[in-house]
Length: 289
View 1 (tube, rainbow, N blue to C red):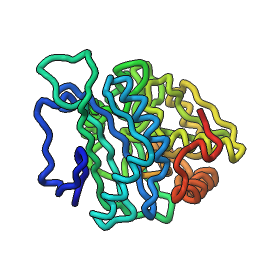
View 2: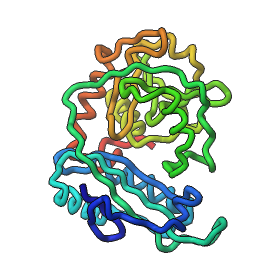
View 3: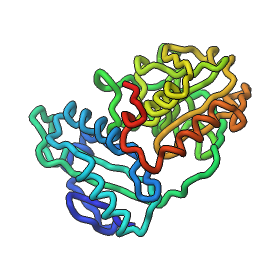
View 4: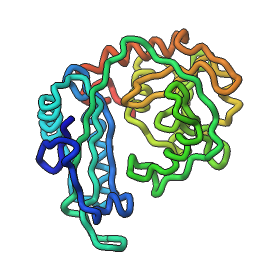
């Protein structure tokens, strides 16, 4: 498999960066994960918008547009002979001295990883459990998709290697937050609920897209601070991220839900799949924040 690093496409085993990269030393780096469907990078503009905003916050002097990024994607797809791929687009601060830096980073390391990913034709389903470890608070005013992933790693170790199991975080105050690498939604009496970003969750691109789909479909949406007992009364529960798309949850601990038979999650999944081969931005659907 080939990857892109700082203008070059090279075999993955030959990729190298300096041990003085502040993305490695201090976590000063961001990444976006997304998929290509028949060569199209779904919601690329929305991912780049979040990435560019985060780069400004980290004082990394770099930004990306659709044309430049899609050229990298298409070169890499061609080299790897892929159409449907998992992509991680990574920007780390670059080389710095020993010690925290307050000035701008002007030569970041830009890396794109890629691997083959099959396109599913049916809605997936998982079980879930509440995690003992609590969701940590964001390092700044909002959660960035950054290299600070220890909270997620410890949570994954707690839940184990079963790919059919998702761990669900609570905040330290006991509010429902999100999955280990996913956002969380549920349906009760035809209303779509999801935790507010006020809880400190990542405002996922797929989360935002689902909220836009729901609004366009005429669903009432409520974002707020919710306790575990709010999920006990749910009819349907599902999680989202840009790689897994939408996954129905059939149980959380001893509580059971409709899983893949839920009509609203089925509708949202169908509409998601109808759009994933051509949309560049959430705004093209009508937008949501």
